[in-house]
Length: 414
Image (tube, rainbow, N blue to C red):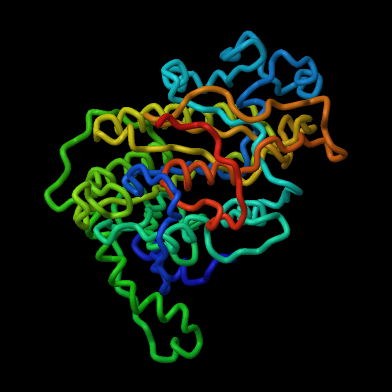
């Protein structure tokens, strides 16, 4: 899945737009448990650059941690202790109410077999849910929506905020990219010269049908103004992205559909909505001077999660929303000579929401089992997180979408 030139061409007035080609609609597996289908919202938070897991979820009881990190290790007395061997970075203090209410799950040891340490290739693997030696064109969410489309009444399949990269929604999903999170999409009309049909028919097709996705963006833009939210959002680009995401939800409204666009009476639903929102927090590629940089980023993440919960409760969406972090990889256990960390393999990820079964999951870091490159062994395949979303959260046939069976994680309360 390679970056397409038309993304930049379509990114006028702070927006880039994508509309799918035709996809065959198939129903979910007969034995799937749909819950409310796409009435359940997914919010993905990309930690772009690869977050350092060992200084995020800290194995403070393992003396090897401090041997590997003599300069950048988090002192035990500063860390937020979760149990007898695990703690959180002090900047993650705003997450503690979620942890204490058992609505925050921490999945440790997440990666994949034969991990690739290139930013571009590894995020491609995560976005497409491929094997490390497999090249897929569509994002994993694009495949899900192709197999089981979102209800026709939804304003869009998904909204990408703060990035022009469509990631898991690439190459087919009916997704809107709000590159500038401070405002809703304002798309200008693009000319489609006749010669473009011959030079780049795919781009010509996208531009020809652009009006449909612009209409979807219009449906997300409030026409009479939204009542101001009581929630206070943090400052900075990430805080603005979260605020924009909550405005999108407020404008779209909570969909009334049950499983895949049918109301409880079995009639087609008419409520608007979106199935997915993807946010990006940049800056995690901490090769040098990591301590201050990561502390600031984790503070933004934790404060963002806290404000997101407050806003979702205010909108009545907390219990039907699942928030999940992801990144292309983690960092090496041993610090480098620049008070930073280099590209590594596994990392922990956070999952939160009103129906999340909080606690520690996965495999804690085994610092005595580093491989020949000084990296941690894989404990949980990232596609198990995706299987949890696809199967347990949305009731889809996860194996068909992921092209292999992955055991979902027990992160959700029924």
